[in-house]
Length: 406
Image 1 (cartoon, rainbow, N blue to C red):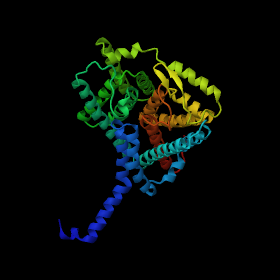
Image 2 (cartoon, rainbow, N blue to C red):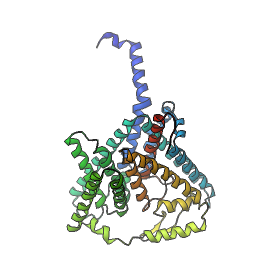
Image 3 (cartoon, rainbow, N blue to C red):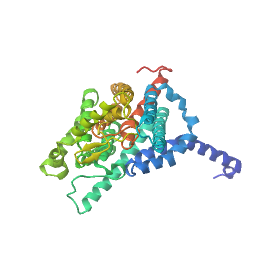
Image 4 (cartoon, rainbow, N blue to C red):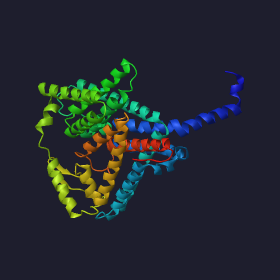
């Protein structure tokens, strides 16, 4: 190295350039990707803490570079913020309102809004960000799955009746939903873009691991959501990949039945679940306050098959229970606009948005409490697709010279 390169003035200038570039671009992206990837290793509270400590400060420091005002040009973003704001306001008419709970709801509303904004702005500013995010997300998921299966094999307890992961995936239903998203990302985004046989085999392996985990959790809701997403894809996108995934899933289920694996047998043995009873109770509670709901801080006390339940086990019913008709209209509008943009993207050869959106929505019809009050898998299953679609809307607006047509 030349001595001139070590001069204090040049060293300071070079360091400033490198630091500035990292602060306003790569560090923000890396922090956000890190938060998403840790969904497989951190429980809900740890996930939020990491978001506060890592992603939030960097995002605040980079607001000028990320152009926060541009979100106002995306209809999905406006509906998302309106929905979160209404959920927050609806807490005010909760019976027996406790202000500390209201403060916690405000914290969660801000957290959701910032997560959505980071996703939309980073993806809108760089199309490569989306691919990088999906690659890191799928690889982190596959590594945790290898650990899960290794523990299962060498634990000496091969007859465990439902497989679970750790972190947010420690609950079998939530875990099956998270890894279902990974299966779809690998199948409809990463596999078609793979270069070389080695990379293709890698993503096929990720798909296989994810499907095995989903089936061994004995969780029917995520499997139904996966089938719905695959059926939608066969109508408007790559039928070959959809049929391959569907075939792998079918072979796995039939093999599990023939081998009498407990989780697979349990899938059909527990056919009469308690969801219908809980949904009936939720409808009765909704009828008591149909217009504006019970308030977003209300406690839903439902008698489930396996004991008392706070959740209506259905996003639409829970949404109506908490916020009434305005909340339902806002959520339906948000889902509708997002679905329209996802459909347009699928027609242009990018089915991943529609696949993820259909999967996340159908899964939420079987076991979801809220999109704000109780964040868990919803980070990945719904808020991530919303943010990516808002980014696509912003990119489309820029390519059209400022006009966006849904």
